[in-house]
Length: 100
Image 1 (cartoon, rainbow, N blue to C red):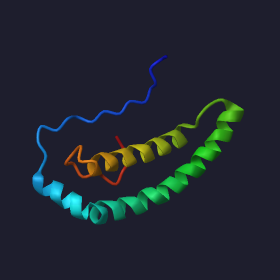
Image 2: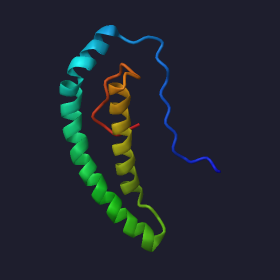
Image 3: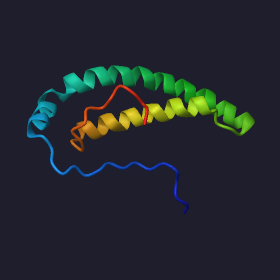
Image 4: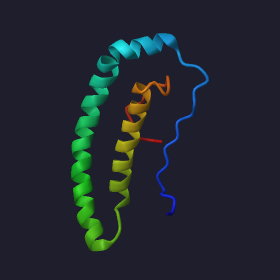
C-alpha cells in the first residue's frame, strides 16, 4: 500500500505547564471551545460547500482547484491544532488561521 501525502505530526513536549493544564481542563470549553468552535463551525459549513463544488469540478476536469484545496486544507489544519491543544498534546494556543 503506497504512502499517502497526508501526514500529521505532533512533537512530544518535554514538559507541559500545570497551570495551563488546569485552566484547559476546567475552562477550555469557554476560552478555546467557544471562539474556535464558532469560527470552525462556520468555516466547516463553507468547507462542505467548497468540497461539494470541488467534487463536481474534479469529476468533469480531473483536477482539484488549488484555491479550493488550500481552503479545505486550512480548515483541517486549524481543526487539528485545536484538537491537539485541547487534547493536552501542546501548550501552544492554536491561532485563528489555517496557515502552516
